[in-house]
Image (tube, rainbow, N blue to C red; front, side, top):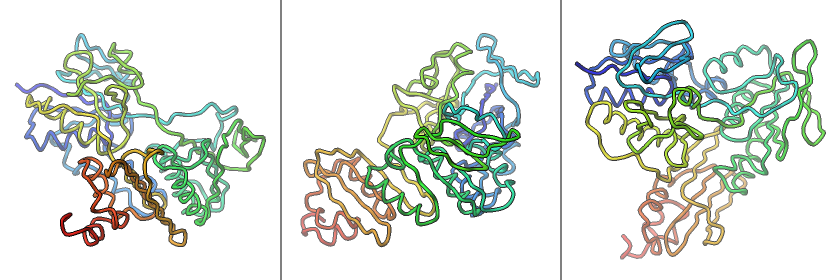
Length: 405
C-alpha cells in the first residue's frame, strides 16, 4: 500500500514537487493543505497582474484536473503537527493523518517596526489576495508609499505606478536591489524607474504612520521628512515560515533545517522551498527550489538520487520592463570590464580573475547572461574570448583567434 503524503503549504514549491511526482509515476494519496484560498499559483507574476499586464488565469501552475490525483484543502491553516502520531490538526477542527510529511510553508513579509501602522491603508504585497485588494483600490493618482527597494518592493511599485498612482519607494540602503546589483547597476536601475514616474528615496525608512479616523494620511521618515499618502505597502523582504515546524520539535534556525535529501530532524518529515535551510542557506529563487523538488520527489518515491547542493544560481529578473541579470561574484580586487550606454539604460559589468570570468551584472540588456553563467560555472579560460566578451557569445567567437573556436 502506498504511503499517504501530506504537504503543508500550497505555493510554488508544492506545485513543482507535484509536477516531479507525476513525472515519476507516483500513484499514492497526496493531500495538500494551504492557508490561502488559492493553491499553487505563480507569485512571480503578481506584479504583472497588478499592472494589468496579465490575467489571473495565467498564474495557474497546475492543470485544472490536478485535483483528481491530489486532494487540496484550501483556506485552512495547520495549527499543530503531532509527529509521534503522524497527525496534523487544523484551525477548523480537521485532522489529517500522514505517513510522509512535507513542510512547504514558504515565507512571509518581514515587517519592520513602524509606530501607528495598525490602521487601514497599510498592507503588504505577497499573495494573490494582497494583489486583489490593491486592484480594488479606487481611482487613480493616489499617493502611495512602498517600503522596500528590493525585488518585492519594486514589483509592487511597478504595478501601482502602472495603475496611475503617484508612487514613492523608500529603501534604507544606498542603492536599489543591493543584494543583486552593484552600486552602479543600482543607480542605472533607479534612473530608469524614475524616468517612468516613480519617486525613489534611498537611505530612508518609515518611523511612524499618521492617520485620521483610523486610516493612513501620511508617513514620517527617520530623517524627519513627512510624506502624504493614502496607501502604505510594506515589501521589505521575506522570512521563512518555520514556526509550525519548530513547535513540532523539528530543528530550525532561520528556516527549517534539512539535509541534502531534504530530510528534517524527525523521520519521514521533509521540507523544501523558502521555508527550508541547508547549512547557512535559505532559498528564494525559483532555480534552487525546482532542484529541491526533483530531489525530494526521489525520496518520496523511494528512488533517491544525488543530494541537493548549494550552487551559485544566477539571478534573472525583469522589473518594470527592465531586464536584470546577475551571476557569480563581484570581487572589487579583480579586473572589471564595463559597458555604459545611458541613452538606452544599459549597463554591463564583467569581472575577470586569472583569465576566468567570475562575475557578471547586466542591467537593461541581459543578452549573453546564460552563457556568462556557464563560463563562470565551468571556470573556462576566456583569454581568447576577451575582445568580444562584453557583447555575448557570437561576437566573442567571431573576434576570437582561430585556435579559440
